[in-house]
Image (cartoon, rainbow over all chains, first blue to last red; front, side, top):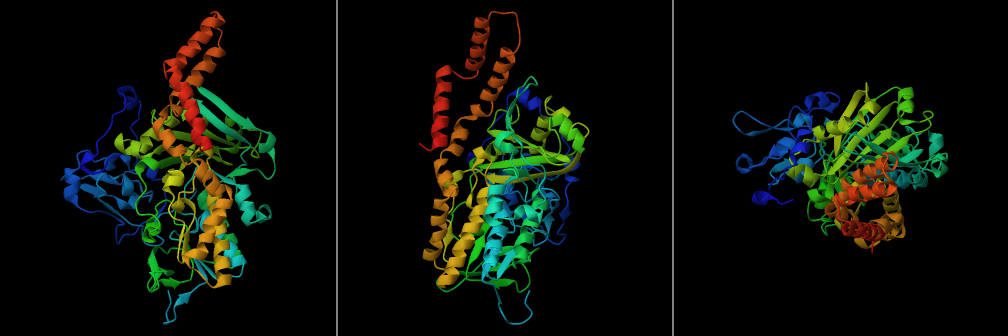
Length: 114
Length: 443
């Protein structure tokens, strides 16, 4: 996977693309338990100008819990409260534009089964 | 943490109360060391998520009487193997059951990490280790020569000192990078993003649907074929007592580049005509996601430095083909602990003394296997047909072989061959098998 401006996307064959069902991720998130740190986010966009320049914004899709969404003003917004701390965005953001830290001790996802 | 000016000192610090960390703490505490086991979650295992199954050879190596201590295992793995899904809804099962898999205690048990790891850490506590939960380690404390002598945590006055630190932080190797043992993040092409659902079903329903005689029998299957959209990846099915874990892992670079929504790929898999009836009527208990470091030997960091060692996922100790990782983590944790005990005897925690850890890993299956399979992760990157074309061919071939079409068998075999060559040219297929053999044997 190329990083930075060299990053480009690939397309699935049309039939496979159409075989993907629409899923409302919140229906899955209700099954998760969190201790939410109301005081601070452990995820930050380093520079919103970089996101504005990012052509494909893959974080909107690849985050397995849909933390990253597009606000009305076109900025990426970060719903860190839903984060399961997997680390996909830490290494998957083509511009390495996400400041990824661990939640403060005790906060964040608390798996019941795992 | 401390209210006086006294520094908080231990003989050893372990970062992360997962399988590797609690194993390390257990072994050191048993040898009489004063051990702090620091965990960022509310409980041990609260951040952990896997398929999955736990191997008893590793548990028993650290805790020979583990069965008497009533580990919270789910079903034993009495049936294991591969399932292959085809696009037209077919399913071919290639599993083994009975024989060695019928032994008791079993070679492997299904488990839920958030439950199992609590028990595992309790065994370390019983040996005398102090579990410190809800505490995130941020960095290291070093002496003037740069040797690690403790950790900085996010607690107020949270510096904790020890002459040796065992880092079992998991796949997001922030601390391992801070130690300078690896100078880069892992590549998305070498990491699998795994995501799954735990789905509750009555015990009898699981028995009936998976063909298991009773709750003393369980299935663990890797699912190939129409699972990962033709991209490098693999599904899995594990039967717990009263739930099933169904999910898949895909290489992260593909998920990013194809802009896939993991939960859509998972839902598509759960709706496959061969999978849907197995989970029908089940209730979603938990969804989640986790990374797996699948880069293998070439992605392993240096394993020690003055005052510190690294074990488990943080050190990329995963053998993806054989579903191994939990066992390596446990045994590596134990070997790091034995090295720390030896260092205490010598009163020397230098890199030279801790290099014994690597020597111990080399003596065991861990570094032997990691080295032998060093090319395997790269192999699947360049041979996605093992995930897609071949499983669907096997489905097709068996489907044709066992159907009476009223055609001469010569035509049948020609059709089967055609079903292979339409997917992969014959000479390429032969080449694939050879390079697969090379990748596995480490030639």
